[in-house]
Length: 346
Ligand code: NAP
Ligand code: ZN
Ligand code: ZN
Image (cartoon, protein in one colour):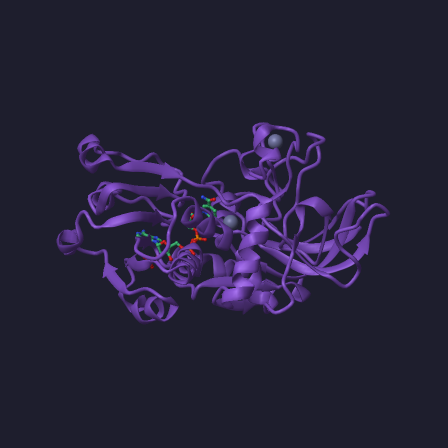
């Protein structure tokens, strides 16, 4: 299937227009005309090879929404004209314990990433959502509630679920104090979800001008992180802190903010190891943990939660020729709060 998109030819190259082929439909596949594709900071890390072992040419993009245009003969979940979404993985082994438990993102045989990896045949390079068309097995596509506006849904497929899942796992809700470090694409979804779940939310940001937005999204408190001395009054007070920062950060300052049994969750992936102070950990029996996106049932649950609570990502819709500028602005923390590409411009 002939497709158009944007590609990174190598780590130092700006992204450029690209024509390529996608597979013709298998029995259980659906084809989509993509309407919007979000720009996740992970796209930038990988297109610039900041994690190592990137595969080029790379078509990034794992926050995909579109309309079903074709269905294979055994498809039952979608029909032509339906809305569908695709997130960070397009397949997994389907037989390991984690897959059977609906935690496909933790597939013991490795999930199949939407791009920058090989499909399950081990040879076909997966090409992502910065494109006009997509083909995916029905089991790995999500159904999108009709009430939600599509451009604001795209970022839910990665940024949304990546914050929803740890908030649910660690029981955010009424009576809990939740901190979110970094008000970017992931962070702003975390604020909206945690507030909707009933938690008292504090945003930690190195961008003082984001305070009004954070409060509009549901944060009760906003802490500018330039001077850690400002943390003194809020020491030992949080149940859960989610670190979404894409750059290196001294996490020990944040461990000190956790109360008894509190958990700091690593979500941002700067690509360098953290240094952890043992004393910050042992006092108050604190935990340092991590979390990666979410499984298919939980993504579907999150989309329904968004429909009930009318939650969308705050997006700036761009044309394809703006992708490189959008990358630079994202790295400079100048995004309010997710760039989403209008896929009709590929
Ligand atoms: P983003 O939109 O660029 O947001 C990151 C935020 O971090 C920025 O808006 C900024 O918030 C803060 N920040 C950036 N540079 C900073 C610096 N030098 N010092 C302090 N704060 C800084 O990125 P994103 O798309 O939300 O992704 C965030 C990270 O999560 C990336 O590393 C991405 O790869 C990773 N990620 C992980 C998963 C997972 O499953 N674990 C999934 C998706 C993405 P303020 O301006 O408010 O400080
Ligand atoms: Zn992502
Ligand atoms: Zn598996």
